[in-house]
Image (cartoon, rainbow, N blue to C red; front, side):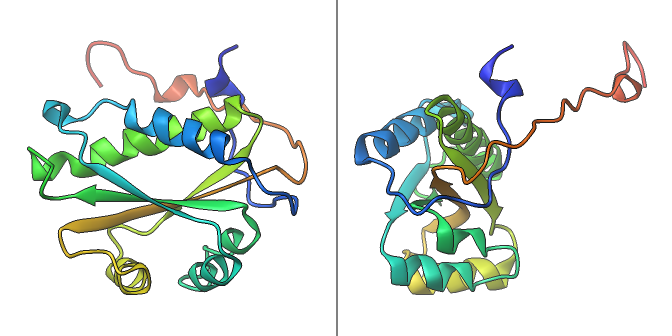
Length: 166
């Protein structure tokens, strides 16, 4: 089966740096995502310093994996680049999924930590990383070498599929 069926959220990482060329591959994959009117309204902040990862890991109760990750990829939505503002979440969602799939392809582990649209989370991240007002901090993707393999559960549920009408 394709890489889609191998992807899983990884929250525990080995204490081993991911090479910069693999991080670049993840960013290239993210930028390959479809976007409304092909605006490509994304920007990224790559975080690898221990003190920054620790600080981000404390920004909300589900952000703890950030402390252990080799790198964090902060995905930003640039409002000045978006052609359809209401579609920016969809654009960034596609971008994030591409990054997660590329991480799986590279043998890395990754997890998407949601920040947007929860205001207290985004404001903390915005202030800490000095993100300009025209950029929305959408998510933090934790990336690293997985601590264990773990099983991937297939999620196909026939009861959720409807044809022609609900």
